[in-house]
Image (cartoon, rainbow, N blue to C red; front, top):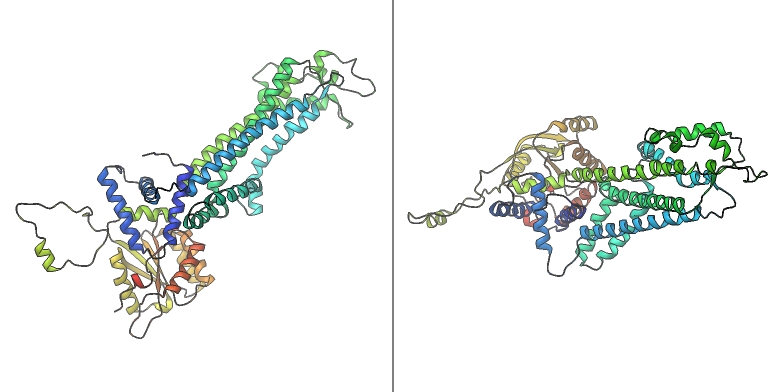
Length: 515
């Protein structure tokens, strides 16, 4: 099994997670049974020798892809977007090289009558590179002021990429188009968009690298095959001494690598290469006019190509780190937790079946696949103050036990703003599963969704966070299942503000036990 996470793997992993949430009839127990079956099959085949979060996710994705392949060769959102990124990167690479060669040929179109002005070369090819480096240094401050972590240039590239991916997905079935479109949207607009930001960043650096290589290649070619003359002229009151100080400063990065005569022109050569319109160029010497090309070439390499190569390498590193961070989301930890947690069954086997299935002395039955010790997680239940009564708490404990949660502590919420804020501050140290109870018969309000969003941010990503929806109670029924329309409304609203939260109640098919 491949040990390196690829971009398409991450997108498909997000896609299949969203597909689980789209299937409203799938209960948390159904997902648990399916994912636990994946784990047991992996252990049986010996494919999960080291049990870890990443290994579980990798095997889970492999199974989901296998079951999703119906022979129609449908493209998943991950493969679609990855192919488009490769094609776009290749296009930018070729475009950068062509533009670099074209720009170089245009500048070095020397007729032999007037020397090439080094100020034009510096302004067009060097100064923008220096400004770009300055923007990179100031980028954290600028993005903080703009309250956006997605740079405008990358956002401009992301728009046509998103449209092209959606167009490709329309050729598949409606489910792939709907859920795949949402998976792509999450990469473009959510906080997790950093995952897409770095592939786009690498594509822009490939363009810049190709541009600088093309320009440097043309510069070397023209210098080797032509008799070029460089000079400088300006209307501004700039003397040769000021210009010499400037080129000395710019040549500092490579001045210790080469001889001084190659690192930059001397003061005398700068004075001898100044072009004065009324005097012409006949009084200028060849050695002064050719002294500029090593300096210009080094500027192009050190301020153009080298920073881009460094940024490209940094883009690869940040790309790998962003994938590692992306995999540390609660919705992905929920997958590995379902795979590693044994199923809990509280229904006893009938006495007759146990008597009939009793093993004989001549034959020993095989050990069940899921015969590990039952693991029940300690749970902290957060319940609105209006529901904090003994009957409701007892019913909740009875309902959550078959799902693998033993309620060891309960706390009231929505009593006051100060108490809720104090409770949220304590959540960072919680080392048990957290279950939040909401009254499903009341429409979700911003206060409840905001509390849930803050709670999800406070808890560790690997911590389990579940939602238990309670329907309208009756006089003799303190805990009932929500209605289907109530459940769908709450699930849609919660999915919009938080991801990776499990729903421990579903309407009708998984109704709560009524005492």
